[in-house]
Image 1 (cartoon, rainbow, N blue to C red):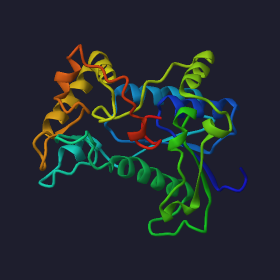
Image 2 (cartoon, rainbow, N blue to C red):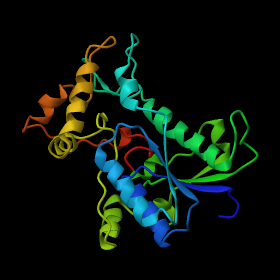
Image 3 (cartoon, helix red, strand yellow):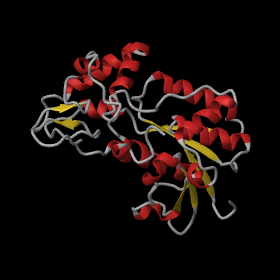
Length: 270
């Protein structure tokens, strides 16, 4: 641990990253210097509640920084004439279903996290970090997501070493993370994702509709707004049907569809 100038937990406030954070707080894992939550300003209120809880039990041990680039929702709604969105919405076509270009993770999560790390280290705008500092970044991928653990590709990451504690230090699957938190008396986090995330399953949208109707109605508005922008209609849900229609359809079930391969590579929903 001493070889790093800063050890950071990438905190998404979902199951795995919450478990990782609490393990560090309770001494099951080595401690970290700081946990950083990149706020898209587009997540359900329960994500903020989960963060508040983590801060209440561990903030004096590992402080949590909440940083943001702004509202991803506003960026999505302001598509202009290009039709290109930061989020990988599903494009209507006669071919196999496929999401559009994904830029939201990089712009609203990864780059925001990097800037927060620079701020923690006191590195100013335009100052080089490569060769000056070494940072260890913890990512909350569990054993059932091991194929998503990839090394950094961009040159800016030469100063950052990724670490996956739930793969190598305390190997655990998602269900084991849930069991560990419950056994310690911690509330079970819900999935951390934007309200209009195109990788949410229909049962997750139904849960949102029932528990946070305002968040669901806003996701419906986003879905309607992206329909006729660009060359082809776009949809929030992979069925390529209007969101309210598919959510209210009792016969539709996509729980058997594996979505992990399309998720946000360990930064969203962990």
